[in-house]
Structures are given as C-alpha cells and as structure tokens.
Image 1 (cartoon, protein in one colour):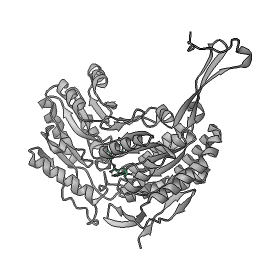
Image 2: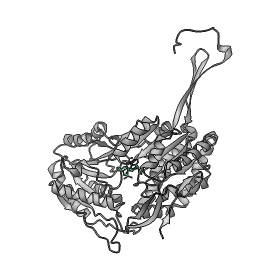
Image 3: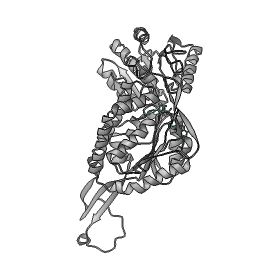
Image 4: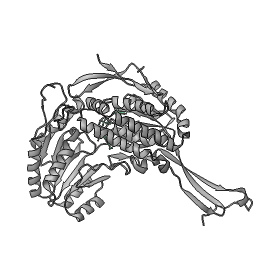
Length: 499
Ligand code: NAD
C-alpha cells in the first residue's frame, strides 16, 4: 500500500481535494513510496485564509515570546533529528550524515531568528528638528509564502520560515513535490512548539499551487529557491502582482587552483564539493580551474585517483560517499549531458553512466564523472548539470581564471585555493560572484551573515538569512513626533528642512 500524504492547513493535516496527485519516489529503489495531493486554487486559498486570520494575534505577541516558541521548536527538531534525517534521506537520496547537515544548517537560522527582539529594533533620532523626534518601526508584512526546491527540503524551508515567523508573519510553504514529508513533519513540530494554528501551513502542489500563491492579494511576499528559469518566472509574476520577491536560482560554481596551492588539499576539496550529495547542491563545485599546464596535470592525476575510490550506494549505508540522484528524469538528463561532453570532445576520465548498485536495480544511480579539457562552449560547461559531474577547464593564467569565473552567467559561489594572500585578496575583491571561499570549497555563510548569489543565481535585492531576512520580512514605518507644547507657530507653507 502506498501512503497518501496531505497538506497542513490551520494547524492540522488536510487531505487533498483537487483529485490530482503526484508520486513520491524512493530514489534508492526507484519505487513509488507515497502519493502526494497537488493543491488547487481553493486549497491554496484555504491555507492563505487561515494564515490571514491567525497572523494579527501572532504579530501582537511580543518578539521575545515568539523567539521562545522558535527555540522550543529547535529543541523538538533536535530531539527528532534521527527520524527526520531518515525521512529526508528516504525521499531525497542523500546520505544520513548529509541529511543531518541539511536540518542542522536550517536550525542555525531559526536559532539566529530567535534573536528577533534585537533584530527588529528600529532607529530613533532625538531633536531632529526643534521639539521633533523621529523613530522607525519594523512591522511584519502579514502573510508570506515560500516556494522551495527538492535539494534541501529542511534547510531552505527553515531559512525562510524562521525569520518570517520571528518577525510576526504567517507563512505558507509550498515545498518541492519530490520530498514533501520533512516539511510536513516540520509543520507538526512548529505546532507542537506552540506556533498557533494557521501561522505555519504547508500546501503541496505544482505550478497550479504556485500560481495561486503568486496571484493571491493577501500574500505580501514570496521567497523562492530553485532553478533559474522558474526563479525568473516567480520574480516577474510576483512583482506584477505587487509583491516583494527574493528568488534564488541555479549555479555553476568554479574553484580556481593556483600553482602554489596544496594540491592534495585542493583535490580533496574538489571531490567533497563536486560529488557530495551527488552534486545536487546549489553550492557544489562543478568546474575546477587549475592555473597553468603543470598545475592542471598534477591536479587531474590526483582527482582521477580519488574518483576511482568513491562509493555510490544506499543513502542509509554508512559506507556510501553519496547516494542516488533524485529522479529517473534527473538521471537521464545527467547521463545525456555526460554523453554530450564526449561528443563535444572533452576527455572523459571517469564515466558515471550506466552505474548499477547491488541489491537496488531500480535506483536512480549515476556514478562520479570526471572530464578534463572542457571548454566554455561545451554544453557540459554552459548548463548546470546538478549531478556528480566535475569538469576541468584549464586556464593559462590567473587573469584567464578570474575572467572565466566572472564571465559565467551564474554567480552563486566560487573558490580559490592558494597560499598567496595577495592573489586571494585580489580574487575575492574582483570576482563577480556573491559568495567566495578562500581555501574553502563550499563557502555557505553562517546564519548571522547573508546567503545570496548574483547574476542568474539571484533575483531581488535582499539575501536570505542574516539581517537581510528581517529587512525582507518587515516593512519600515517612520514616525515623526512633536508634542503640542512644542508647536509654536501657525500654518506653514514651506517644506521643513532638516537643518
Ligand atoms: P525547480 O525550479 O524545479 O523547483 C523549485 C520549486 O518551484 C518547487 O517547489 C517546484 O514545485 C516549483 N516549480 C517548478 N516548476 C514550476 C513552474 N513551472 N511554475 C511554478 N513553480 C514551479 O528546482 P529543483 O529542481 O527543485 O531544485 C534544484 C534547483 O534549485 C537547482 O537549479 C539549484 O541550483 C537550485 N538551488 C538554488 C539555491 C540557491 O540558493 N541559489 C539553493 C538550492 C537549490
């Protein structure tokens, strides 16, 4: 019997009424493990209505009390960590340790957001004019929505909902239809922690549910993470409906390896960041850029040796370095791109196509693929592969390497491996990419900094988490005050000046 999942609306599970369903797979076996209801407009509107009704009381609770509820939620998630991580691995396919990391990096943002009393403080100017004071307030937007991708089914819903809730908003989440069970479980834990009914809801669905959220005038802001074409669509549609939007898209992250780098460290970093989570991370490194032919030869030899030792296996097997990719369609797409690399003349040093894993003949397996002599005109360079495929693009000089990273249409993450402080500093200053690592392959900033890519990796002007999240999820009100005893003149017909 295949389980039937639900939505979570108004503090309880709600069965689907649209009559449309999607399949949720176990990527290790290829079997359907659950049926997911896909919400129609009425179901989305019910979630938004419940959110709109609950939000004013939630906003009226002082921020410290909201923060305490969030800390209780963090505690509950920690107590249920093992169950949540297993659930996450069973639908996504990433290893158990990686699932724990997914949840943990989300929780860190909720912990940060519990500091709402400080983060929501406004500004105050005494005596801005004679007898006049000015202060600003940060007020919640009301109902806000999150639309999130499959690859971090815990972290990204938590990155969005933690700050939104802490700021006094009600939140409607439309998670990925491929791995919805962890978001549903998080909804239960929010309720258990004391988040009032309706303040956090989950509607499952596809484009129909997303469009209903984008078009509903009660939804004031949309936070999106996913692929670039959909990010652009959400950004444009949300703006056309008068909403705030921050939309983060795909990536093609490079790692420049300078001749003076420790090449063993650089190779280890490339293996972990290129193949970890089967390459299904927006901050995965998918392009290695060694500078100079000698560096390239020595780096490629080290990569080849390490790739051969990687173990692809069941996500719950502690011996697996990485698990399957998320779907049969993803496997076909990645294998097709590997074939295109061969056809385009790149040198395939390790071939991930056609991998089988004993005991799991139907799993969505792709082995680690390594290409050398990739050039920027090839499809494997131009596309985000989002699979376990690492391409080596050889650069003649540091300037060529810098230009390659800067000219790439994506601008999520980038890294440089070097022992030279001047090169590192120059690179970090000049590269046209949002997040930079110096001898750090996946430079995901911690909760109290902000996360956001540039160019085709991010649309909107505020980043996720850190102080930006509180700017995004609040509107600023500015109050100018003068008391009657300070009003000494009659009507004035000129614009008052600050001086
Ligand atoms: P996706 O774009 O297919 O889906 C993301 C969300 O959009 C899902 O909730 C999905 O249901 C919805 N969606 C899909 N098609 C839609 C449509 N036509 N109209 C409206 N909504 C639609 O992305 P994915 O495959 O789930 O996730 C992988 C992508 O996300 C990769 O490109 C990856 O780089 C990106 N990503 C980016 C970041 C970042 O911070 N920049 C982080 C994680 C993932």
